[in-house]
Amino acid sequence: MNRIKGRYYLVIGLFYLFFLLNSVIIAQDVETGMNVTVSPPILIQLIPNFTWETNQNLTNAFCLDDYFKDPSGFSLNYTFTSVPNILVVINSTTNNVSFYPDFGFMGIRNITFYATNDMGTTPSNPVTLFVNLDDEAPKWKNPGKNKVNVYQNDYVNFTTTWTDNYQLQGYTFYLRQQGAWVSTPGSFSGIENISRASAQIVSIPGNFIYWYFCANDTSANSNCTDLYSFNVSVPPVVDNPPSVSPPSSGATSPPPATTTPPATGAAVVQSEAKKKIKDFLVEPSFFKISMKQASVDTRILKITNIGNTEIFINLSLLGVEDFVVLSENSFNLTNGEVKKITVDFITKNNTVPDQYFGRIIVSSSQIQEVPVIIDVNPINQKFSVDVNISEKYKVVKPGEMVQANIIIKNIKDITPTNVKLHIAIKDFSGTIYDSYEEDILFDDTLNLIRNITVPSNTIVGEYLFYARIYDENNIAIDSDSFQVGTRYLLAVYFKKYFLFILLLFLFILTIFLILRYKKEREKERTLTLYLMLTELKNLIKDGKFDKAVQLYIRIKTIYGEPVSRASIKDKEKLKEEIEKLSNKLKGELETAKEANSDKEKSDTKKSEDIKEVNKEETIVKNEEKKESENEVKNEEKTK
Image 1 (cartoon, rainbow, N blue to C red):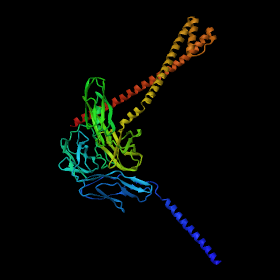
Image 2 (cartoon, rainbow, N blue to C red):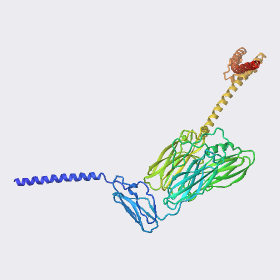
Image 3 (tube, helix red, strand yellow):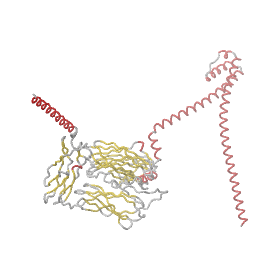
Image 4 (cartoon, helix red, strand yellow):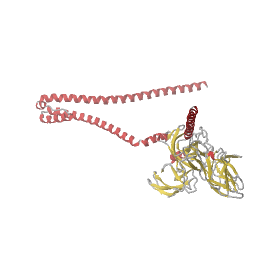
């Protein structure tokens, strides 16, 4: 019996032990299930291309963990596509990637990496591997500066476009003003890019300035542009010239917030040109075009002869010869004639995405320059940027903030993308007045509000709020214009509310004319009634009672009062009514005369006060003259 009872307790104990173990296992499974991966890996940034020489290995080129991410923070498994002639090895501990090409191999190969977790696999961007003895130096084209006439203390921006068969790395700008050469280094990347530099010209007018760029690629191959020079111009005579402070040279080295602009620029050119133009008018005042590579846009340039004689007009291009085609270059304009010129803006397949500046020069007896700003974006954009300045910030004063709404969109792959956002204030010659840069991460669409302060000594004129987003392989740019200066505020306000102001003015003028008309009519009516009343008295006096009754009825009708039948039949009654009406009219006439008299007295008093003041001034002057003569006589006596 005890043995059976013991077995019974053993079975019950084993059952409870099994139940407890099963509960623990289920709890562990539930806890583990709460931490499983919920989505595939994410490519957080693009893997760059790699270049190295033949018979050389490229070890630990990059770490895959820097480019892929698991949403739940777990480790990922990495694979890749096979690559002929190159052994690819992923370190299982660090996830670093190394490349081992075959001996003697030279060529280009493409590879794609993959990251995998429980929910799926995510590919990287295609990565290009260049294996060759790179002995080809970078090539240059389109060297230039942003100003034609350069004066002492001006800031000048220099640029040159570079291309390389594999990868650009850096550049150096060389400038000689007074003796020794001064070098300024910079960095860039890609197979096509632009070297940029900005410098203040301190040499005196008449001196020659020499400059050139040199660039190198990742294989240490280097090349330099030709040597260029320009002459420092003699400045025009300007009253009270403003002070000058340096602008930024571009995205590679943004200036501090206190950066102030140069005194010369497109704003000055525009302002001075508009003052001088008298015989013709050009519309619009500037062209700002946004285009893609390999595209065409057409606008109209309208020129109007506002002078009194026939004029000859000549059109020329400066700085935008590769982008602009004019339908006509020269013509005559008679008095009052309007000429419309078709302006075609053209970009090529190989146009470097960037912002370009130039001018259309319209010349006759005077010269007017029409600034041209062209924003060129890639034909196959990965992302885009759109800049819009609200009406509130379209006109700002120097030292105030200008604000813009910036919309960034991912056009192709809606994946997290890291880019740099560069913001700047530029004039219509491309001179940068202030700028800054920040890193941006976005997926699909990102709406930003950004602002930048206009330097306090910025000259009145038109400017650009410029934005550029870019990474190692992609770029997108856009800009919007705004005005600096208080003198434009009234013009902008008047233009915006012109119709309302015109209607309000016409309404006030109409009310004034109506009131004045009523006043004059009332005076005329009172005078007419008084004359008719005098005639009525004479008719009664002469005994012409019938005519007097008819005239009395007319008077009462004009005056707007009812006519009493008793007064018409009774002569004495009629006389009393006439006497009452006469006294009433006399009172109205006396009131009107008193008003006119008070006005005349006021005018007379003002005139007398003015005469009195002039008289006192004359007396004071005479006394001063006498004192001066006495002083002269005393000095003569003393001598």
